[in-house]
Structures are given as C-alpha cells and as structure tokens.
Amino acid sequence: MVWDWEFTGRVVPDVLRGLLVTFEATVLGSVVAFALGLLLALLRRSPIRAVSRATWLFIEFVRSTPLLVQLYFLFNVLPGIGLRFSSLATGVLGLGVHYACYAAEVYRAGIEGVPRGQWDAATALSLPSRRVWTSVVLPQAIPRVLPALGNCTISMFKETPLLLAIGVLDLVGAAQEAGSDAYRYVEPLTLAGICFLLLSYPASVLVRRVERRVGA
Image 1 (cartoon, rainbow, N blue to C red):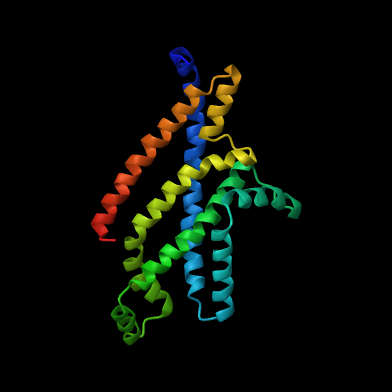
Image 2: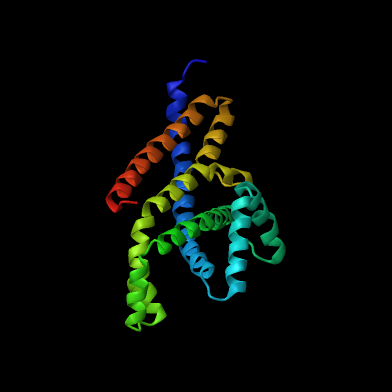
C-alpha cells in the first residue's frame, strides 16, 4: 500500500479532535482516580474493621476485573438505576474508579513509608488526628508517590481506546472513523500511534526524572 500524503493531511484534524477527547478523559480520569484513591487509602487504614475490610474487598474486586467489563457495567447499569451520564462522563468515571484502586495502594505504600518516629512525635505533641494527617503524614507521603501516580496516568492514557466500546470517539475511534470514510486505515491509525508515542514517551522520561529527584 502506498502512503497517501494528501489523505493524511485530510484526516489530521479528525485525529487531533480525537486526541483532545483522549486528553480530556485522561486528565479528568486522573483527578477522579487520585482523589478517590486517597480516600480509599484512608478508609483502608480505618480503625473500624468492617470499613477497612469492605474497602479492601472493593479494591481487590476492581483490580481483579478487566476495565472493559467495568465500563460495560457502568454504561448499562447506571441508566437502569436512574443515573444517566454521557458516554464520556461514564468513561471518565470508569477510568477514575479503576485507577483509584491502584492509586489507593500507591498512597498506602507512601503512608506506610513515613518513619515511625514521625507518628510518635505527633502523638507526643498531642496533635489532633486531622492535623497529624495534613501537617505530618501526607506532606511526607505524597511527594514519594508522585512517580507512581504519574505512571498510573500514563497507563490510563494508553487504555483510553477502551472507551470506544461505550461510544466515546477518542483518538483511536476518531482515526477509525476517518479511515472508514475512504476505506484507508493505515494513515489515520499510524497518526494515532504517533500521537500516543509523542505524548507517552516524554511523560515517561519526566516521571523517571521526578523519581530520581524524590528518591522513590
């Protein structure tokens, strides 16, 4: 097959529109994942055993089932219980919940990495629990987990093509649609692959630099 440069130029705007959707899903999904992940990590350490066990079961269940199944579940079940979202919002929710369970374990490792002496010092000063977390534990734990959270974001970015299954026209979906118009898929799918490479590789390099800086 001969590469058609004229066709390549015509599909570039479509591919870029899909890239914007992919970027939006990744950013919003990361916000949900990091906020919910921190909440799950704190619930996992709850002194109430039932809360801790229920959180652990939820995390293990989500981590043990495919993201695609979870997306289908949310897309088909949520409207049945009166919760109607757009395909993109459902996809963001699915990505956010799925990666929140990985982020929760990352946060947990960071929290457990805080030296025991810091906990003892906070206890000796009779600091309230809220201040122990906000002034002592989390300021030390979160910088250490930033590289791992960055890797979660990169993984999420590369899994956004799964959103096509629930009708989100992401980068790959837009490339497929552009290709179907002319029955030529090599050019748009190659452009989609290049977009993933151009964004994923620099992000990976940045994460490695942050990792070296924080000594994670």
